[in-house]
View 1 (spheres, rainbow, N blue to C red):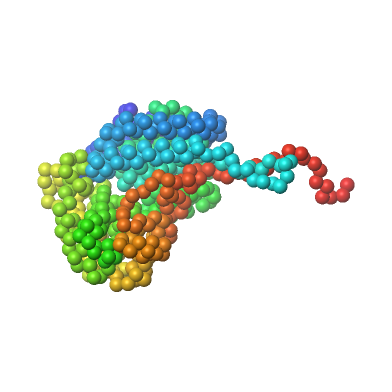
View 2: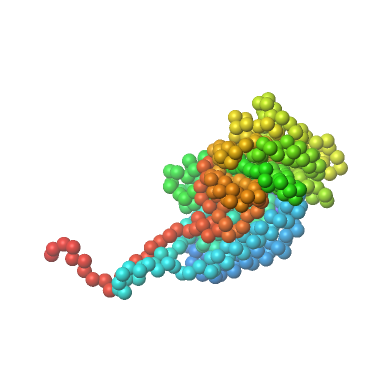
Length: 500
């Protein structure tokens, strides 16, 4: 593939119609990693037209489910074949560690295999008893049509797989627009789809910015569904653009996720160490650039000082550096813009009275941490309260805020006091209390005595302003299908409602 030929339309790799290009930067040193095409409205319209033809006239929607599932399994095998190369691309493009990149590829592989098995194992339809042998009534699923997929920069390949795999196995065609910041692994995925034998026009890719590419996809009259993962502001714009054509919309937006720790979870040395370790994992994996990050530690007051002191001590020992280097535990932020936002959030928190326990600045450069990289120290802010911006808003950086409670009701109130509702966790040695609190939390995913695991079989989505729609699980497949009721009268006869 020639440089900047990263737009894929009807089976052909090409440059942008305007000739525009964009440099993709390595966040570890701000140097150019790749050059991609900067698509626009003309490229987007061409991609949608190709997807429309492939759906209306091509073989894919009518291909038996077993064959569609078999293609997904071939893609899964190809992902594992290219595991190391893709993980390296993901690490250099996003800044995450190489090991995190490998885990991402494995999770993507599992998603393709899961949806292949799910679709292949379904029945042909749900028969409804009409009360007479002369009528055959069945509810069936059919593909939605042309799907627009807009994916984020933090987990570009993983988030793409949660959309691409169910859409394809359901018989849809699509146009995908990855983040302009981290598009490279999505380009690789589209190449693997073609290698696996997907017909031309089924999978189309336009690299470019949200405006104009994402905006055009959201409003395009020939797009039947738009699936967006990203921030609240952009998600709102997607919904507004899609409304006039009344297309289906799936939005997975942000989170401000509570990690609630009761004192009894820390009663033993092992329990204390586990809760601290998981609080670090919740807040600082991928430098906090995770929609489900446990960025709000809500800790019982009686253990607060001991817990936060140990948390800060261990956070200071996290090894920052280029994600491809051995021993590095946390990479840079994805861009200069994200670094600026992180610095601004910390500054505002300190102005509003937060107590800095560790971090709060960029680290000193060293052999694995170039001075030009977008690095920021893991930061713990104690004595926080709900009125602070850093507590209310999604920071998407290595920032952990600390709030405290004295009663169970107070813990629940604090945890639910957010306009988001994506994820959260409860830590307690009292199983009944843990389950009781989990049931009261208004969040789409709640972990008990754990943080961040997810299962392909379980739906992923949120409450409140964390979005609408579900990914993964059976409903993840249903997002990309329409439901049709077929009523067949085997012995038609005159109705004779009227005289004559």
